[in-house]
Image 1 (cartoon, rainbow, N blue to C red):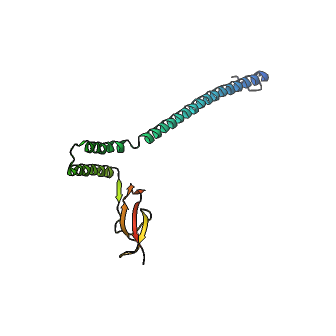
Image 2: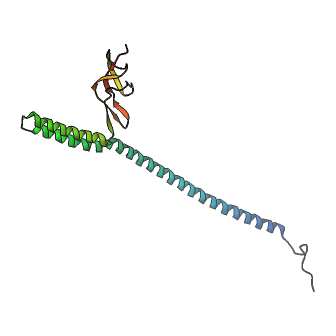
Image 3: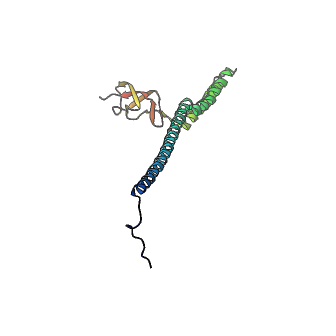
Length: 177
């Protein structure tokens, strides 16, 4: 039996092995560089896609906001058209009877109140209430019987939209003695 060759007995060309190892390492590095460049290109493409998608979302949102601003009063305006039609019909009546005009105006006022209710527009009529500067505008103070700073008369009703004052009520307030 012959003993296996030991490393010292095998003829080795060290420079050839060294070049082979270096070539193998260089090939591995080259493959890694190619893979990283491909990943970089893919990442660039994804960034551009996300950027374009973000720009599209921003543009659509701006369009939606613009449309909302333009047509925010569309429903309210549509409801007011029925009131306008009733007023036009009242003006077209040939009869000079005050009662028919009054009935027409009452029906139109009911239509308008219905529109106000539908859109949460509330009337502020503070007669007999404590004066509230957030909801009322005092035109004058007069000496009268009653508790001071109480609304004595309402010269013009106020209105609120979703509990935010659109127009304060114009009132006369009882003056403190």
